[in-house]
Image (cartoon, rainbow, N blue to C red; front, side, top):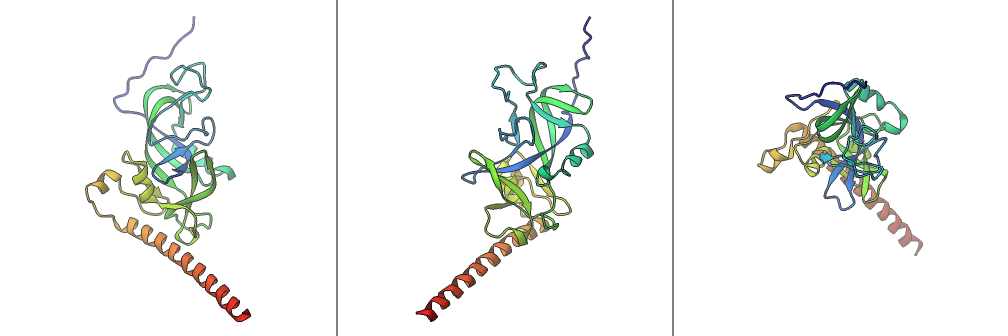
Length: 231
């Protein structure tokens, strides 16, 4: 006889943790995430339903398939994944497990999720991130982003942490490890003012872009002067 575990009916959605890369749509109007393992080719929104990556017609999470969203119970386990070289630029996500789910020893496989908080690690130079910039790779129609400080943005396509939260919607909070927190877009829509951390981050991003433009203008000016002298 095959024994089955009792069905769970929690009063509140379980909380889980995972890592994912932030992505920005090609036209810059939408933001989301893409996973680091199974299903990584399918970017998802802050509030989204899972689909079977094998194209089968069953509803995730099917017991005889690997489909569905995945997360772990322990935040520390998810943070440990960020130590690997290929995951250094990923964000740590805190999610609400929604819909049907299958509980495992270390986590859940489930049908629907809401990303509540995304934590960005430091820039590759070690300074706390103030923005997410083009990481140099992506998926069809989506640019992968990586945490950057104000001094490393340069001319790359980028969006501030607060800007990413606004584009992603659904009340997402984006936090820089050791930095400030982005206000939920719902509060921004009602005319709430940005706090000091968000203003500092926006100012740093603008200053970095201004410095880059000035350096480019100076380089073009030097090239122009050289051409005039040779003429």
